[in-house]
Length: 96
Image 1 (cartoon, rainbow, N blue to C red):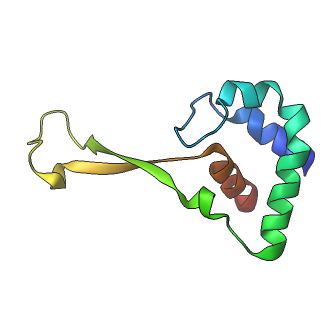
Image 2 (cartoon, one colour; image 1 turned 45 degrees about the horizontal axis):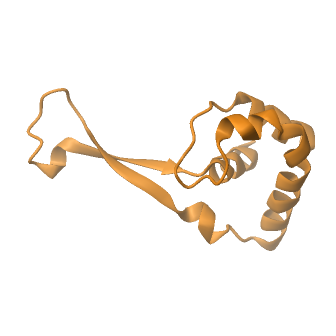
């Protein structure tokens, strides 16, 4: 699974969420060192059937649906959730 996590980290863009403690470019740079620890965390989470509450947090931002809608009407916005890197990575590991 370490190889799979290494590969998934390599495929991720350098976008960093405000919830991430470390910038994504740094995680990608040291992925060979942190992958075993991430794997241990994920294995423990899956074995216990526990999704950490920190992974459930998101930064939600409104995004206008169209280029010129009425911005005063809340129906014209999409909620966009920015999740932490580890949350997204665990979801991808589970999907595969």
